Image (cartoon, rainbow, N blue to C red; front, side, top):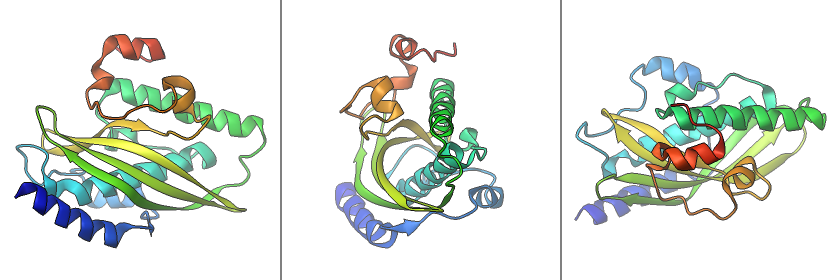
Length: 204
């Protein structure tokens, strides 16, 4: 029964959300909801959390592109709880911006980000999570480009958080640092001190 409800919810939401633009001012939206992204059930992640998970990842992705191209500030605390992942994302943003700056590309600013869902999956078990693959089309002053990003979302203390974030594009920071063609299915990966240490971002 839960799988049927999830399928119906996903179909309805995917129809409504595909190729929609992220809210233009995510910080204002978060001020309207200071609790962040609450789970439908405080007891844990459920099928009813898909829309909130999609909204959270869309807003995070939109902020990310504006951070790496426009040098806008990104509030990772609004989306990520794990300190190791936050430190990795900060390094990723700095690396990307420095590369664009080095190649004199930072004058061509991001003006909008359209985000649709290409795949969504709910995984139960001891550590339930959502897997979302989002396709973003980044519009700039001149031109645009498309890029996929994979997310894992969990519920922590009644709120949704991003547990993993991976961009599989060729020569992306994630592909160069974590490896190409990764299988993104472990929401506990940023708690693996040995794995994180190999990336050079261990905070503990």
